[in-house]
Image (cartoon, rainbow, N blue to C red):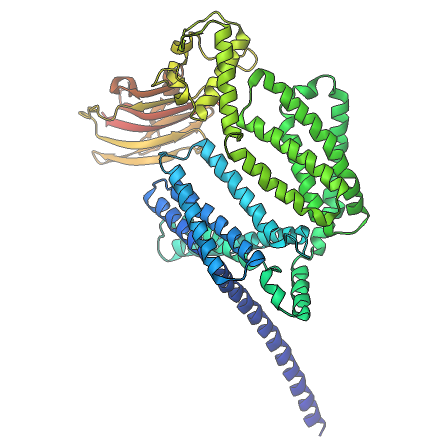
Length: 620
């Protein structure tokens, strides 16, 4: 009887364990099903965004496969994806008619096509268009967070917290998936069969271009909108609770913000204030290195303020009360410093953005000081307005900077009698300060692609080749900064024949100062039953090309720094060199070695060089 009772108890216990294990398993399966359902719902909710992301992934994969630049198409699809997501949340917030949704989708396609037509005429994306695009995408992302809570009972802070958490969750899972797939691919390549090295790039494209954004969107709830006016109060209450749960700040993040980030900001602020007070009469107004630090500081204050808006403890309350008021005078000092520096250098697009952001940060600090935290959405709307101002003519960063730089340059040239009747007159004997100004502005205009718009410059003006001939002096050399050190790039005339008579073999190889391997094999040469090995070897500040015999003895060594020394003083950009210029021949009793430079790049600033070479070997 006791045995039977014991058996029954054991059986019951085992049944409970099975039930618990089963329930855990079912719970895990349900979570997985919910995630997959969330992804499919995101595709249904954002169909146009999905199509644009898919197209972007296809073109990225194509560019990897064919090794052809597809930047214009990829950026077009990225812009289309973000714009479509914004228009979808606009529809959810303000409209209910399905026809309106299709109209908004049509608007998204039309604007995306318009963006493509704007960037299509250029062979490659210019810096200006790249920055305009980046700013536009940033403004759209802020709109994506702000639009769903316009005039809503849900605050902008809640929407921002949801987006913030969703971004890092999607990034975390994407990183885990990428790491796992990479391990599987690596094991397959090592143990089963060889894989093309590009498979890792294809995998990253699928995960980070397609999966990560869609997973992010799947974590964004459908906020309260026009359609919710039809539902009951109870249903409205449940939906609001669901959104509030999604916006809940995790305990880990609360601790991180309250007890780590805020104290660190407080210490940094104290150091910053002490520096400003000590240098208010001197270095502060000329220290350009302080600009990026103060911009980063202002961004951090604004970001932490929004994240801390829903956290209630002594640290966050103190931060919200004090730091916006501290931010305003610091930013105003920086704006004044930046404006003072414009008198000598004129406006550049970077300085424009520094000043514009300073104005925005000061305004945000004032609003944070006087408005309740529920009104933080106003600061988001300001971001969109300021971003639009910075990229839309005629007061955008690039129109203003181009006009300012050209005017400043013309004023300096006219002051030195170098510009008459819309023609430039070369002149060497001008003050060093003016030489520096001319050099700095010309290089800035060239980097931005504006030199072609200057009528008094030669039509085929190339700054690296024609500067000294055009202006009458070499690029300004600062005695302290050891000159501008423009890079040198030479390229072999591809139409010229290269003699190969008398050599046993030749091979193409590259050398790179960043590749610091010793005795890296280039190829193996066999002659008369003997085996020789051609190597490249990093040696201090140069790379040697060596030929070793069967007993690993050095038969010949060529120091490639000889190539570096020969071309170091060439013009900064010399498009082509002849075969004679590109050829270096050395020999001894055993070996004759000839090297022909196909292309060479010299980075004078870092004393580095890399090259593509043809190496001809004759074993005597």
